Each structure stands twice: as structure tokens, then as C-alpha cells.
Length: 69
Image (cartoon, rainbow, N blue to C red; front, side):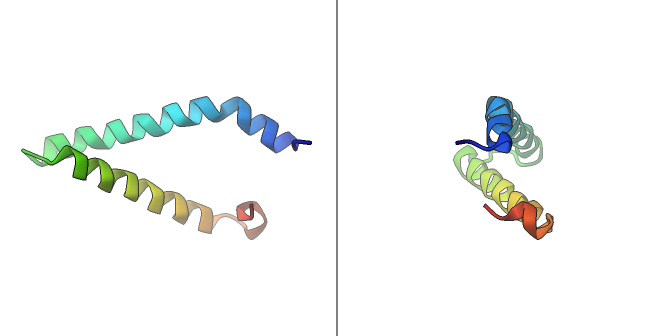
């Protein structure tokens, strides 16, 4: 049986994906402005890696009971 948290998260999963894609697009635009002739594939890889790193930092800053899976 799913917990109430799992059920609630499932209701927001599509919005979270939309928001994450919007963040990638935001930083893609910044790369385009700041770096003429940018390698878009490499920029995308760096953006996604930076987002992973930021999420890891956010997770590590949460109280220990909230960050456990």
C-alpha cells in the first residue's frame, strides 16, 4: 500500500518534470548568451550534472529523517 506521501507526490510528478525541463531551458539560454559558439550537447551535460549536484546538496541539507529513502 502506498503512503500518503507517495500518493501526493504522484499527483505532482508531471509538474516536477515540467519544472526541471524549464530549469534546463533557463540555463541553456544563459549558456547561449554568455558563450558564443557553445557546444550544446556539452552544455546540456554540464547543466544536468550541475542540477544533480545541486539536488544532492539540497538532500544533504535536509534533516536526516527527511532525506532517507
